[in-house]
Image 1: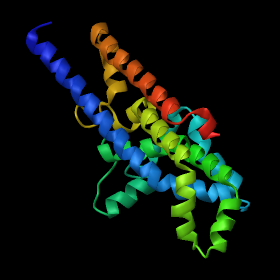
Image 2: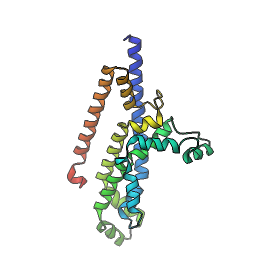
Image 3: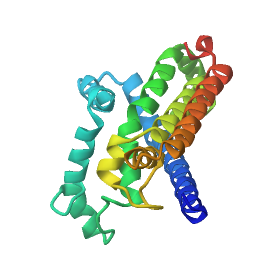
Image 4: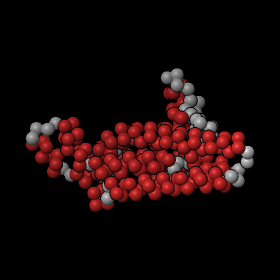
Length: 231
């Protein structure tokens, strides 16, 4: 391989790494914003819809990523409901764009954010909330001054797992984003391209980096948030 070819490969690899980190960061922020009220509702509600909503949230845990990606592709296509909605807003179509990757990643990583938060909220119980209510604390005051501090381990777990899971996505992002350099080509797709081209040295470098990253994430999670606190 020439120096120019090696430089191009390095540039593509770094571009894939940056795009993946940006995608994981945006996805994690959105999941914390959307997943917190959803997890709170699942933890506190007695609605008959609780089981159905919980099952929908957990679907990505058992559903093949390509199946989820296919239906998202149909829904966000020109004839799909989401595609028609985004076109009516003048946003165009989401497939094969960074925005499409974000939507797919939020849905695919949803259980990794919602379930730790739900478990943390359920572990708090009614006692602290009732004590706060006797001190005339309103619902929002109770949530921000009582629930959030007590649920801190759950928030750490949810954020770390959502970020790490988004970094490791493959099937969903390939179905929705395709393989467009610097736009939708994430690390997992870049590794696949290297293996397909028999470029095992480059594939090994990226894969080893992913392995080290995954271990570091889990080590940080268990160090900052030990199992006894998560329980």
